[in-house]
Amino acid sequence: MWKKGGWGISNGYMEDPRTRFFAALACDQRIEIIKLLREGERCTTELAPKLRVDISVVSRHLAILKHLGILVNRKEGVNNYYSVTDERIFKILDTASKILKDISERQSNIVANL
Amino acid sequence: MWKKGGWGISNGYMEDPRTRFFAALACDQRIEIIKLLREGERCTTELAPKLRVDISVVSRHLAILKHLGILVNRKEGVNNYYSVTDERIFKILDTASKILKDISERQSNIVANL
DNA sequence: TGTTTTATTGCATAGCTATGCAATATTGTA
DNA sequence: TACAATATTGCATAGCTATGCAATAAAACA
Image (cartoon, rainbow over all chains, first blue to last red; front, side):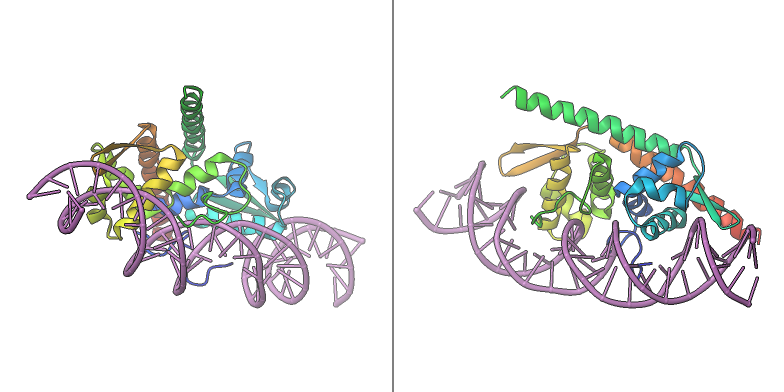
């Protein structure tokens, strides 16, 4: 893992734990992983094809989310199945979508009224 | 601003706009700023003393949040007052706190039951 | 045991971020 | 106009992050 001293995740001095939480969500691949896991548990090789990155990268993203407690895993033979621990994670993603949508509309209106 | 090609914020190829949104929240100072603005609008110099960083840094953090649409500003004389645009921003911070608290308790129980 | 499949690390690297200090605006005031 | 207060950029930099490829590990199986 690329954790040589940091692997906070995100920048140096972190006091607020939410900083790490949001940093974990600040990544396309990880958001996509959570989205895919909304349908139920999936193992690394099932997720990899849909993320357009090397499977090793997927493995690392899963490790990051697991490390934070956002995911849990269940080993079954050679497969490692991951799933989201808390439904509120999905809720946060949904709320973020709504906020961004409204912000987008608000800014569109500003441009339209020039 | 340190935006030479990126200032996404966060990493290279971003498709999901939520990635930028969460990246904006993945910073102690910015979370603290939002927390302080919960009490009402504040200008740069009012915020700076509480963030333990140079005022220029505060200015940049405010610019980042404004750029994303999370904050709006109102100029009054030499002062520039910022405020949060959407109450749901606070809600997301609160939900994150709750989730992290539960994760923390869950992991404590695991350790306790070894 | 040797082989195949699945998953995780070691290593190297391009690119991004946060920060401070100095230099500039900008605005209000004597 | 000269000066003070507020706020924003230019520049340089330490430190982090995401990614790929190769090497390893772990498990199921012939």
